[in-house]
Structures are given as C-alpha cells and as structure tokens.
Length: 246
Image (cartoon, rainbow, N blue to C red; front, side):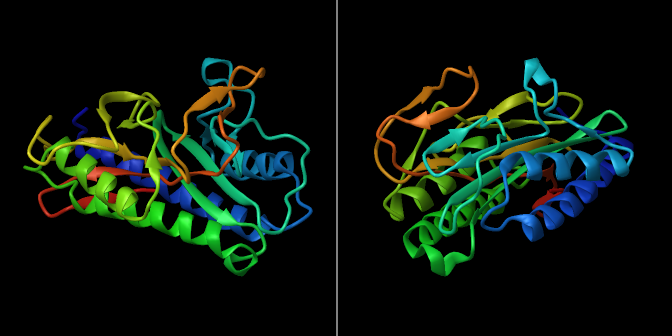
C-alpha cells in the first residue's frame, strides 16, 4: 500500500508511458476506426517503451485496452466495430513498467463534443467528479472524503453511481488495498497516508439502472441500454495533495 520513493519513481515512469500512449490513442480515435485497431496501437506503443500491457492476460482478459461504447460500462473487449460520430467511448489502459503499474481511463465523444452535446456534458461531469475526488486525496483526509466529493459531483449533475464498481489501490498488483468507493461520508473510512498509491475511478450511468455481464464473461452493460461513462486517475497521496501519475 505505502510505496518507497524508489517505487514511486518507477510508477512515475509507468505513468509517463501511459500518458504518451493515451495522447496517441486520442489522435487515432475518429469515425471509422475499429476498437481492435486502437488496441493494437496501444500494445505496440507500450511494448516499444519497454513496458507491458497490464490488462493483457490479467485473469484471462484477452486485450491491452478495455473499450466501452455508449451503454457498455466496464471491461469491454476491443473488437472490429467501427466507431461512429457521436459515440461515447471510454478507454481504460494499464501499463506495467519494471513490475509496477499505472492504470487510468478517459472518455471522449467520437468526432468531437459538438456531435453529441448531451453525452459530452455527461462525460465532463464525470471528469469533474474525478477531479473533485483527487482534490480530497490528501494525507490526513479519509477515503470517505474522496467518496463524498465524487458522489456529490455526480448526483448534483443528475447522474448515478454504479456502487459495485470502485477505485482501488495500485502498485505491484492491478488491484491492491484499499477499495476507493465513489460514495461516502466525510471523515469516515481509512485515513490517507503519504506514499499510498491509489486509483480514483468514477463509473457512472446517465440513468438510474443496474449492469449485467454479456456472454463474453467480461463486458458489463447497462440493463436499460442507456449510457455509462468512466474516468480514472492513479497517483500517490502526499501532504500537499494527490500527485497524478496517469
């Protein structure tokens, strides 16, 4: 849970690789591009940086990215579907460098926000909720402070948190202690300490619904077929704030 300065430096390097991969993915995301093309690009870039795609092979997952379109919530397997203008696309990516992991997710509106302003507002609200949680990720605060900040931003926006999906610790393993809930009570829960490395990860639906798993055993979708959105940062708790790696 608590990382040494040497371990943190490795995670920073993993984060830099992750940021470079995401920058190239964002350039490549456009109508007509397939999800599997994005996955192949990510794997190529990660391996070219002497790193490893954290997701590939994790508990049998077959790809380097998780890609979710519109009503897909998490753990989507990239396939040959072509992106369409106005699609709400969430992309989750993990990079392992010298044994330590950077894990983060982003969402875009394919073709630009103007192609679907409703979905753009949804994504922007979830990102703001993520950043509100990051603002509370300071040594001496609690996990409840993070969860409450995320929850308040989501609910004020008129959206809904899928409580079964959470943020988490990260480092040598994809999912380390503690769970980082997207809801909570200020002052409650574990006290945050310097050197703790965590992922803050709002996973949100546009309507009040639940999720179900598709036959592939991985992809979660909303029961009502309406949109879901994911944003995620990983980083380290410090006295002065949350240092974001990716």
